[in-house]
Image 1: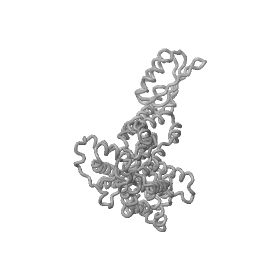
Image 2 (image 1 turned 180 degrees about the vertical axis):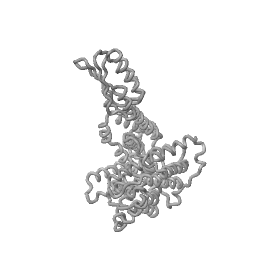
Image 3 (image 1 turned 60 degrees about the horizontal axis):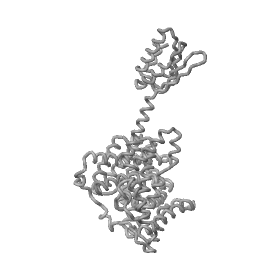
Image 4 (image 1 turned 45 degrees about the vertical axis):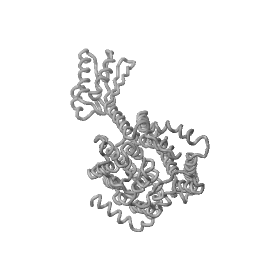
Length: 515
């Protein structure tokens, strides 16, 4: 039986008697996803409705096609930064066509079974990327918490914080910024208190929902003049079909680069989230190619209706697993609840202060910056930590794509160094004999280091060359050793070569010529 047939058979058998578990889990995921969908849309410079539509498609479409049935898809904070820059530079209309191109790339990659290769990214780059995104979200949404508009870049937002605090929040004079800040502080306070003191029986109730609910009630009771969420009265007004004319004037290189960046980052985040879901439970194992293709279909649809890009998201997926979901029905139903909420509760959604949603995003951004990640990377040396901070700081200072490329480039340089580096160590014994220890990789790139080590040997006594530490040696290095050995032996000096654990291709030749 093929893998796909086993997958379908397993889903069919798992559906028996599991409906109630999926139903209850879907409600939990819906309550977690609803505020995040709207908040991430605002952080992306898009209307909240765009995030809600992405959540619906993530549940109703991608939930049905997914390669990991327990993963939940929707708008993710990881793409908010790149979408914000795209919308700021080229307008909202350009997002749809670019997202359709990115979705097509994901779909083709999934059909070509490239899903597993999207996971081949250094952990330090991923952690640095998430930390950089977290910092950008915090400094960007800081302004939204004060009912101000965020600026175009990380450094600009950092510089503008001073004016936001001392030009808007202080001195206390009843300004609009103060009312918005009160809403944000209440939201985060409720979330923190709930996270710390919530009863075990109510652990699945999301703190973000309680925080936003409390802040909305406060704003309504006190009649605070703060900005509120704008949600259209019907679903038809939420849909914005794409037009290729929106791409006029954008260089082809920018179109291709942005689409590739969206596809790459969305795919990496999705498949890393799916790998985490695999570790949370033992019932389902991810089909990475199918998951990637499903995300491609989802992003094609999101681009077609003018919504946000989607990924598989770990926060909602982990809530789904913890709530006891059994099959993909839970993810599908969460999309149905979102559709029902937009259709029936749009007037309630319009009461929510945008400062409250921004406060939730600040909370999410802070959690993306994890000092524990740095401690884990430090166990493997200084270089992973350097790559982590280089990726993070470049993202904050420039943009997401540049930061990821810097991290990947540094990782490749580290790999190049590792696979070409030769270590030499010379030990002179009291008896007069000299020992030369070679370790690492001996290629033509290592010839200067090797010859430098040999030139330092001036003794007339026996020389022992230890090669057991070499993982690989090529013919260029062997010829250097041969020539150096012949010169010493012509002068009547003894040279002993230990050639254990060398590359098989050269072992026979080395044994014949150097022993």
